[in-house]
Every structure is written in C-alpha cells, then in structure tokens.
Image (tube, rainbow, N blue to C red):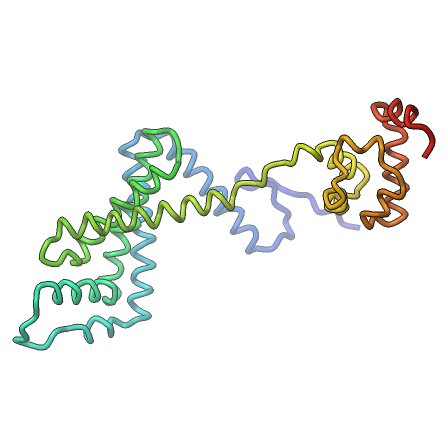
Length: 264
C-alpha cells in the first residue's frame, strides 16, 4: 500500500492528494494571517490607512454589485419634473431616496466611504483604547454615518445637521447590534450547584443526563445520598444508573457519608 507523506508548503502541512480547493483556501488563510501579523507591527497611521483602503475597496465592490443589480432605475424614477416647484424638505427627501437607489458608481462611492470610514475609525479607537467595546463600535458607526450623509448628498438644506443626525442614528443602531451580539456570543454562566455532577457525568460519558439531574434538583450536595430509586425518578435508564451508582460508591469523598448513611 502506498503511503501518502504530507509535505510542508508555505508553513502549512499539505497532503499531496488533498483537494485543490482546500489547498487554495489554506494558502489564502496563511496569507491573511501573515498580513495581519505584519499590520499589527505598524504604526497607528499606517495601520489605519491600510485598513481604511482595504475596507473601502470591499465596500466599493459590494456597492457596485448592488448598483448593477438595481440598474440605477430607481434613481431615474425619482427625478423631479423640470421646473417643478418643490419645497426644500421634499427635495431633501428626494435626494435621500436617490442616494439609496443610485447606479453602480454612486453605490460604490457611498459604500466605499461608509465601510472605509467605519473600519478606519474603529482601527484607531482600538489601538488607542486597547479594547474593542460598544463605545468603539458606536464611534466608528457615527463617523461612517456622518460621512455617508455628506458624500451621498443626503444633507438637504442643512447638510451638517443631517450628517450629525445620520451619524447618531448609525451609532445607536450599531450599539444595539453590538450589545445583542455580545449577549448571544457569551457562553452561559456555569451552574455552580452541578460542578461535580457535570464532571462525573462527563467522565462516564453520560453528559446527556445532566438535564435529568437538574430536573430532579439532584445537586452536588446530594451525590453521596443518591439511590437507584432517585435516579429512576428522574428517568435515567438502568445502565447509566448502575454506572453512576458504582462511580459514587468508589469515590473517596463520598464513601464516609454513604457508610454513615448505611446500606441502600
């Protein structure tokens, strides 16, 4: 039988028979890690400039795709009739609608400014403050929202006020998204009443029965007192019951209390 010998390509262990797509993905991942490592060693202005440009390029690509899909038809439909008397507020609303329904170049510009500003401000804030928290996220969103408003022509009769309003709106939305993401990304707090129980069940390969212990309020303090009938009451099958009881019987810290209690 032929033996496949992994080779080392670019710092990564690669199997000669590996899928070409996987090889490309591994190479791209290596390049990404090297780029991030190099970027972290640069000064704040250099890192911020690189991050801003790369993020702006990504945003421009996304905007161009969206503008191409929409075909810019929406913006032509939103053009006011010639010589029409339109109030400043109505004209501002039209400009806002046009900014969100432009063609490929318009959308590329808008998204480039928005994503580039967000990434650049976030990069500087993280380097200066040493952490990535909700304040950093909201500050970056405020700057990107304000610049998006100015560049896209959504300013209306008072561009500065509208930019501040847009920035505040972006910041509030981003802050809410950040907080929700933090809440759902954090692992649930460990229940200290079942630390020993969880360890015992894990060692026995019976993790699925932790919910049964919790359902019957069989906490760590009750482990030396557990009987077959108690485990039966919480719907644990005979096989796992025998393993649990035998483990408790052999556990040194439970022996004295079980002997004092007497035979089951």
